[in-house]
Length: 154
Ligand SMILES: [Zn+2]
Ligand SMILES: [Zn+2]
Image 1 (spheres, rainbow, N blue to C red):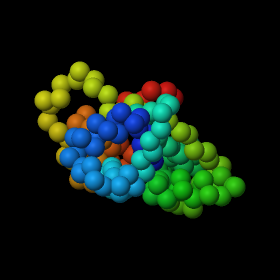
Image 2 (tube, rainbow, N blue to C red; image 1 turned 90 degrees about the vertical axis):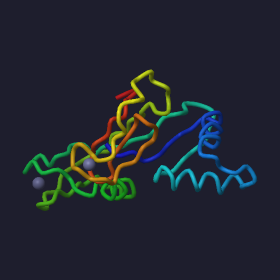
Image 3 (cartoon, rainbow, N blue to C red; image 1 turned 90 degrees about the horizontal axis):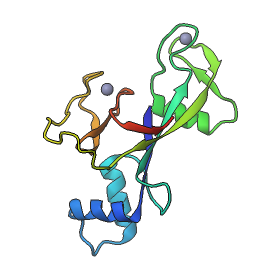
């Protein structure tokens, strides 16, 4: 799964601005841009169905012919979405019909979990330090598909 967008309610947005100590004299567009840079994915603010992170997944993955996982998932998802034909190409060049599954993950909610547990700094799946914290307990990796986000719906 790859997080592609964060949807915040106006209230949560305000909380984040407060927590990040963002100066209030900045224009709205600048603040949004700062948040997008902070989270590394687009941020949307709206009233309904909020405080979720939109994540996407390629299906099937790995390749049904050779069993290899699809690399550069982010690029592949962009490509599939911008084209009418849903052909996935695996590292060995097999082409097969695929689809994108969209998930809505719960974030930014106080979970009563042990926040004192040590912060994750390295991806437990691939060892990359290229990981992003959405909150102390919500983390995902940019270099592989690992995350510890909790899904709301499947
Ligand atoms: Zn293959
Ligand atoms: Zn990883």
